[in-house]
Picture 1 (cartoon, chains in turn red, green):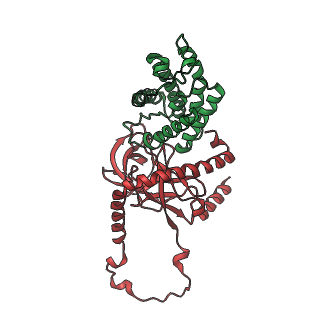
Picture 2 (spheres, rainbow over the protein chains, first blue to last red):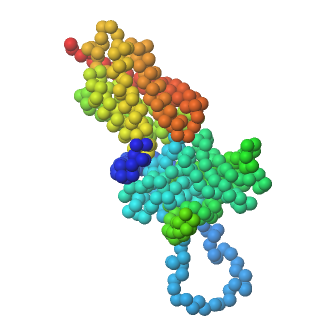
Length: 258
Length: 175
């Protein structure tokens, strides 16, 4: 608390704190991890299945598309247009039951992690975003944090809202700001909006309960999280490579309006 | 075993249990967050001075803060209880002054009821300070009250279990 108001103290303190607690938690995790191998393996198989089903060879291509066109631009366009880069990271520390929860992962600024990057688990379910890092470790604010705010949308209708946590159940988050004219049913998927740190369409959870907020014109929707926060062993950190460009434009627009 | 070594081992064990067991188990309810690491401060020898106590309390709290990523929160609560500890011990100590005969606060040195009151008051103060800071941040008075009461109850039960499991043999110091 003291440190949050002083940037220099904060940086120095958290750098040491992250390095040491990361090392100790890593030691502990190397034992704990052994007992979770089975479940980790199962979810890896599921993730693999999902990826296999996306392979090009599993789809039939209609004839009209297979027309040969000579590309005149001799540039490797795949490299330049990459927008999201995924980096794997091992979870070393994780809290679930506290009022504000963090996940600590063993990948830091030396390995390409930056602040504000999104984090998902191996099945593509949203875990949180990076809030602090040291050389070799990063701290991720999980969805189960009272200050967390992730922009989301209902997959079916495309309506926007934001996902927050009320601190009650460790597998339920709230989706707010969905207007009442939108049709919502229990079981609908809630996915990332694609506006923030995450690409569009990563699963946050499924609707489990819909509450009518009598005071406003919006629903309060309870969402069962897709990520199992008690069992995260590996995560992917997502770097949005275009974010600086986007931020520059936003800054320019803000300046122009001042 | 020397007193210093005993306390270092105690510190590491309590911290380990707090960080890797109590902070990780699926909560019975989101209002229940038991803390037993403060036993380290409560069990320090009688002869520890107030300044030493507070420095020790600060370090204890800060180490836990390193793990829970809440720099300063637990440290402040621990400094508060280490400041009040000598005061409480002076109030609760029996007439024949066990301070001379025993080394540290326990059931045998203080007697069950005074020791229980000692535990109750300090655990209550620690928890209410902690949850007060939390409640100011993002919740109301009801959250604060229920959470404090429930967590204090669970922490006390755990503390008594620890007391019963690990009976601390008290050497009577030669006067």
